[in-house]
Length: 210
View 1 (cartoon, rainbow, N blue to C red):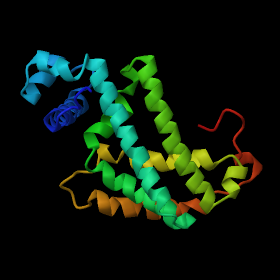
View 2 (view 1 turned 90 degrees about the horizontal axis):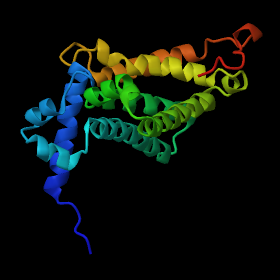
View 3 (view 1 turned 180 degrees about the vertical axis):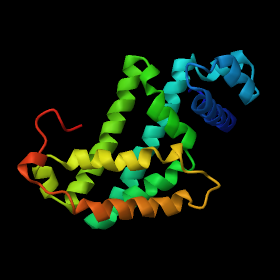
């Protein structure tokens, strides 16, 4: 029977992923070499290749790991069985709060996935679509008429526009924490969710909805 991986192996792998995500977020994926990742992790380059066959595999592990984590958050919230408004608010608040501890991974997910080989990129994009679909379903549960008008995904993408780019301006040492901002984002979205009218001129034509 083959041996399982040791705890130290998994710990070292996680540390490599975290440090690589930080470097990719700071310098960009194309501007970071495996030599720099190895040096930052305090391991030799051959040792780094023991964990990841190449830089593409390292990027894929960061991006896929982050999207898997976001899907786990969605599943946890679904399992709570909350009423529609509380369910959507819980999703928003958990995502925004989680981004505080995964800013590097989130930046990599939003900026560097385009550099992945097609097969790896597709897996990440499929996960992103499932997350977006879960939020769109939650929006529709709060306001069912927006799905009938074809606006549920559009409103969801506007919500993600608020959540996804907080890392570009929200300072970790600033007056507002991610926990505080999670409630601000939820309040702002709920305050505006009732506002869109569903007149025919606002109904998207085929191909307009993300």
